[in-house]
Length: 72
Image (cartoon, rainbow, N blue to C red; front, side, top):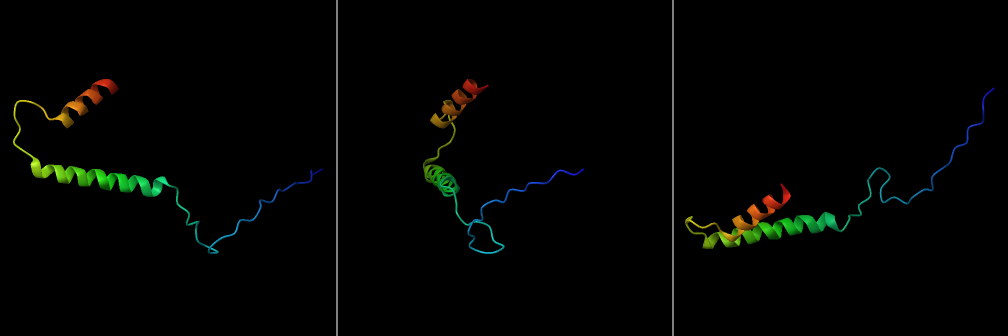
């Protein structure tokens, strides 16, 4: 003997296009690429003042080494 099958319908959502996906973006979908672009521009702007390596490490290298020691 078969049991009756109950189906629950989902509420319909309005769509912009019948076959298209939703076009709403999260805030980070624009913020992260913009942040990466800004950081790359800062690196490029600082490269104009680059100088030959000397015996002491730069500030960025020191910070990176400290971060790697803390993590691993």
